[in-house]
Length: 120
Image (cartoon, rainbow, N blue to C red):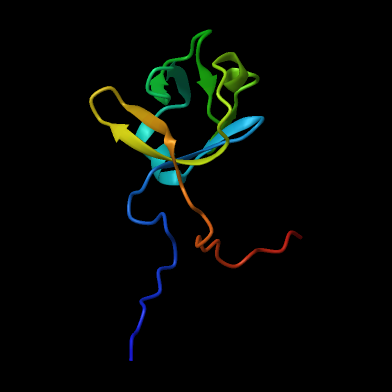
């Protein structure tokens, strides 16, 4: 007999990921926790197709995080980024930044969301 072990989540154990949507950008709890900030700045490298999310102080160039996401209001159109979906992210301790490689989408077909709660 051949047994296969059950894996409850593809993203447990310190994995970082970022979701790029049409209206907002969302990150998982582990990614948000490592930033340790309320405000972030976004930069984009067109040559390597990498999005950089950095911890920041409040300024005119910063976005405010609400829980795990923020509204980008045209940021992806400004940089001409057409990719949408979940992407693997890497955290850099030196500059407290998250680097999102838009060439590495994450397959979430096996992701276990757990039991759904009923809204009362």
